[in-house]
Length: 207
Image 1 (cartoon, rainbow, N blue to C red):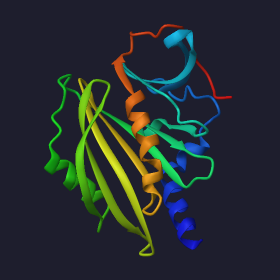
Image 2 (image 1 turned 60 degrees about the horizontal axis):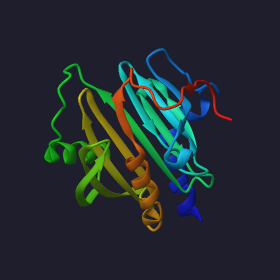
Image 3 (image 1 turned 30 degrees about the vertical axis):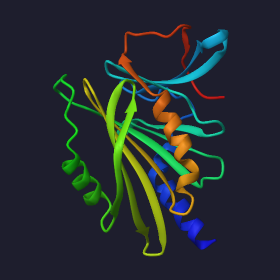
Image 4 (image 1 turned 180 degrees about the vertical axis):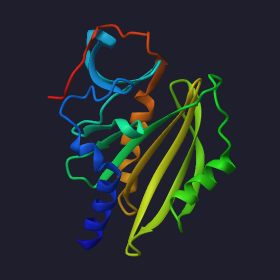
């Protein structure tokens, strides 16, 4: 039970700022998060989330029963299940150069190990989202020297920067959330902000 408490504290640390933003999701002039209704296959109406940062539009599908919380200051979005046993976040990093940056595995490994001192990278493989190829790293680390926590970290580059996705959960439960993480990546779309979906969006807060 204490291990679950420590893991939850680690997850909440990632999203602490996100829970104190105003209820309205349009949180900053250069960082707008809102819902949008679109018509899919067989005329099924779906609700997507749309994040607009400067000239870029990032569209994704919320995992069922997960909450979505923005952190405008760090250009990050946090997703959390009801029981807080896991957490997913994605962070947008924009580049001055409009060319698509190169993802260099060695540099990314070093970045992860500098962020999580004492962590071990246990696996590395490719991923695909929004028509782009990315790199995924599985990482294990101790939280407060007591609880073994795992993260699955994916980096995807686009023609204006990169997106970093991170799933975090107790090491014994991380596999339970691999499908949710994969579904989020599969749903993710990166397009110029001028591009619009099939049905106009509804800006504002969550229900």
